Length: 377
Image 1 (cartoon, helix red, strand yellow):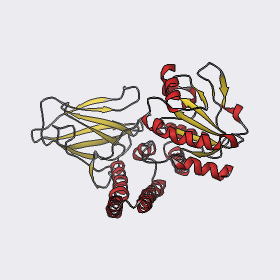
Image 2 (tube, one colour; image 1 turned 120 degrees about the vertical axis):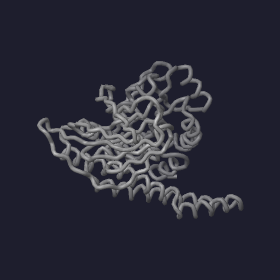
Image 3 (cartoon, helix red, strand yellow; image 1 turned 90 degrees about the horizontal axis):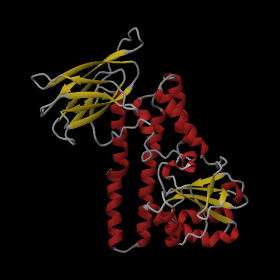
Image 4 (cartoon, helix red, strand yellow; image 1 turned 180 degrees about the horizontal axis):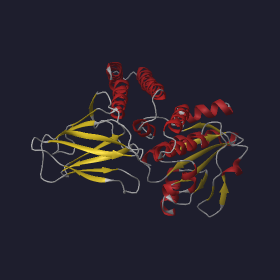
C-alpha cells in the first residue's frame, strides 16, 4: 500500500492547474519549482515513492538566489519525496500540474508551502473541514460547557455534552464523505480513502464504491486503481449483512475450533492481544456482556494476535476471559487477520445465529445494548 500522511504538515495556497501536452510515450512534463529559506550544505534530491523502493531518483540544482526549478517527465501520477540537504523532507503528489514548493530547508518540522496542485488543495480542504468539526467555535463552546459540568459534578450534563460533541464530529465526517463523493479520481482521493483515522470504511462503503467506479473509468490501468479495487473488495467481505468468513484456528490446548461450529448462537468475534492496551481496557466490558448473556445463546470467539503462547494464556487468565479462544500466534500475519482485513485492534464483529454480520466494533455499553436489542433483556 502506498500511503503518505500529509495532514497537518502542509500550508497550501490555491493556484489554477496548468495542463501539459502529452508526448510520444503517453507521458507529460511537469515542473517543480520554489525557493529555500535557509539552504545548507549538500544536495536537493527528489525520489519517487514506490512499494519496492525502485522509484525514479534525481537531483535538483539550487540557484544563487536560493530558487530552484526541475522539469520531470511522468507517465502516470505519483507520490514523491523531496529531500533538502538531508535536513527536511517534503512529500508531494505530482500529476499534470506544475507546483511551487517553498520550504525552510533547515528543519524537519520547518515551513512548507505548496501551491498549484489540485491534490494538495483537496488535502487542505479536508484538513480545514476536520479542524472545524473537532476544534471549531461550536466544539469550543461545548468544551467550555463540558468543563463547567465536570467541575459541578453534573454527570447527567457531562454525558449529554459528550454525546453532543460526538454528534458534531460525526456530522463533520458525514459532510466530508459527501464532499469526497463528488471528487474525481486523484492521488489525494486515493490517499484519503486509505486513512483509517479519517474515514470509517464500514459506515462509508458507498463512498468506496463510488470512488472505485471513478478510478476504473478515469485511470483504468493504474496501480492506484488496482489498490482501490482491492480495498473496496476487502471492505465488502466484512460488511454488515455479509456471511462472516470462516476461521479455523487452534485453542491453547491445540484443539481446532471453527467459527462455523458456533452457528445457532450470537457470536462476538473479538480480535485482541496481550500487548494491546485498548484491548485489555475493553475486556471487562466484554466479560460483563458475556456473563449476562451467555446462558441466552451468546458466545465470544476470541482471536489473539499475540506472538507467543505464554503471553496469550497469561492474558486470558489475568483478564478472566472464560470463552472460546483461538490463535495461530502470527501477529497481524494471522490468516484470520488477513481474511478480515485487520490492521488495528481491538476489532470486533457481532454475528447473528446464521453467521451473518450484524454489527461491528461495539465498545463499552454498546455491546450490551445491541445484545438487548437482538436477544431481549
